Length: 487
Image 1 (cartoon, one colour):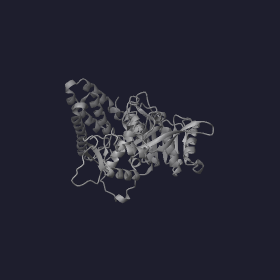
Image 2 (spheres, rainbow, N blue to C red; image 1 turned 90 degrees about the vertical axis):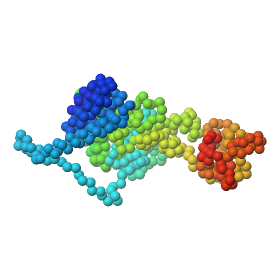
Image 3 (cartoon, rainbow, N blue to C red; image 1 turned 45 degrees about the vertical axis):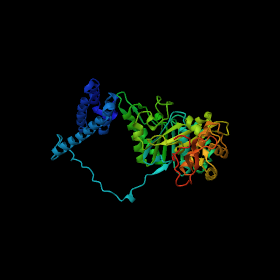
Image 4 (tube, one colour; image 1 turned 90 degrees about the horizontal axis):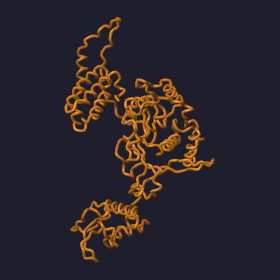
């Protein structure tokens, strides 16, 4: 499917796709010819970014990008340069406006605006509202499969912003108003939010109380915005001076094909434009592609609809459930790990567990007897928690008295007294790993060093942990030890 932004030029791209599909070994040469033709499309008004994206998609669809990615990028770049040169020639040919047949003159050529740098101190700061994610005049997105806590997270954030004095509008496309009442009541109860002191700052609607259809795809596949309802939506934000709007989920508020990148891009950018007009932040809840769900940890690029949504928003986040290894590291029972979620912001790899943002999903019983899920911030055990100053002092005293073995199988292993101090069991794998991380931290803090010495019992040369304060003529082995006995 071609990009909706290509408009009247879509048929030309479809023709080139057909030709490229039959090109065989001459595919790269055909691609160059296509790029040359597209430069003329741009001259006649084709969207330059959409044209470049479509060419890249063509190259990937027919296998050219795998073996010739650098050449493909060079050809696309050359196409943009050629289009600029064609524009320049056309401008040079204009000497004076030519009269039209109706007696009116064509508009004079437009010029680019010279940049005059302002005083850096006078540039307005980015207007962050909450959590390094919500920001005025932009759209943002939170991506996760269903049942991963998106709604609980966004309701918690809505109440947090209301508590900070902001006005927040939560629009639900899935839950009826009565279910939202239960969820909000549970969060208020658990987090001691008193909404009676924040009247007029929280706005809540479902699809019955505030119907909103952003856009649809017509019979010819062209995108059609619902201008009336979008105008009502924008007017409502302005009327109540709302700071943040949460749309949960986006799919419930449009009928556009989600795999149509061009249409989805236009939908999200239209919402971002409303955010800019109203000086508000618009947050979108969005699902992931089914093919990726459960296969591995999710990234922001797993958002349903390809890259369109993520490219169009200012900030994107993804939610993952705690993995088995993370549960073991955090000493969370395997049957409970599904209640812990991690939140990562941005188009990047997942942060280390201790540096990610974590939440715990808990149940709250309401006065009516209902059990409702709420979300609670949770701290993953980190390095600071593992090694206290008291433990450091204890280990310093121990290793100054005698060396301790590196091998965890030895009765002289350093991990044994550490386990006793921390209340851990050296017969439990998860606890052994925690002890090994503690030892690794102690080495990084230069409390310990690893060196080879003769064991008094076996008379063999083996690895020991010794105090950092060694004689100058003794050189420890493997000073960057990670605490697990390997090097």
